[in-house]
Image: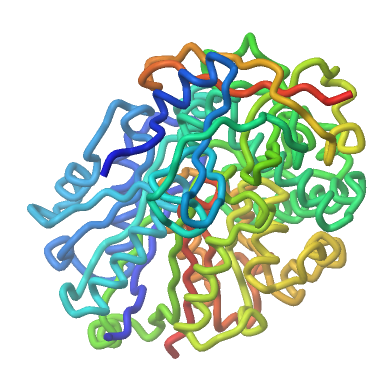
Length: 138
Length: 392
């Protein structure tokens, strides 16, 4: 059975500021990151859709110790965002001072995917990978 | 299904970067286990070995074959297990299954890792390989960052204000360091105060250096066999009463269940159900405290404390030796150390020694009859729980 939304296509979409996912034609559940089957009912009867990129912050951290090769990125803020279509996604936060990134300032706050950034890849990663970057909604 | 016993245990000192190879480290642990069991290399029918990052730490793949030959276990089947930090527990569980099923009578199971040898930058990179490489790593995820996000989520979900949670997390680290002082095999031997925890370097908010376990080198080995053989070898066989294993997808796909890890709850239930035991029956537990917050999450999922309340339990000494359940009398991953491919076998080593009453008096859980292990690979991708009990 053919994989409906591969990483390659998801990644190309993100690079064009499109957050792609899968909608289940049987139960309506939206699955992101893409999988072979619906994350709820396990049906493979899925269609590719574009998500709004809007959601709310469930949790975050400011990371001060980077993996090998990514030292120049610290400090950076990682988020888990609950998208308005339901699934959670990992991304970064922009436009907010890391020093002020407190639970009160961030958790539960509405965000929108404002841009994407590309990890260029390293010798282990089989190529590059984009991720969503979110901004707090006014 | 046949009963399965542990009849010999061995463990190297867990440490920072050191010069012995993985084969050498495992050989030391394995020969100690063999000696304790009174068995010989020729008696071992198979080797099941946890090893996660040997390819990166010393350019060594397929270490299990060389490890078997090195200790004189010639031409036996040798399997390597990789389930991130739960690798050795997978190996031990499979050894149990093959013996219980009647296929083998004597299996050597364990693990080895040189995580410290890699240094922080490469270790951080390779540990991040246990998150989703396509959909999470581009965001810069690291293992401290995973548990840091779970800490914030825990605070928000259970309404434990962050300063209070930080105090509770510090109490977890203080207890683990204190136990490690008395464990000669432990990587770290120092008392650390709550003030020192709270003033240590901020790794990934809100987790500070003393909230995080070290990268360690080390090995652990166990001899598993049948009840009949065990009775001939020792007056103190330690039996497996229940085992569970479970898996789950990437952190983001665990979504609304977080900060609880559903895989752990399923795995632990399997172990309890198989043993016919309950959380209140457990005297001593070695659980996966890769980070201080991870201890709270684990202790709640294992049923020792109510959700959102484990931190209070630690503050009151209920998770200490002499408390409701003695958690990590070895010093845990925090102080004993975390050579990831060996950690689960090291936990069984500790439980076996505790049940036999053979650890240092300062950290012996008096009269311990039933012990449990909890080993977490990644952020729930692999989880194994084992319940062991005295056979005398």
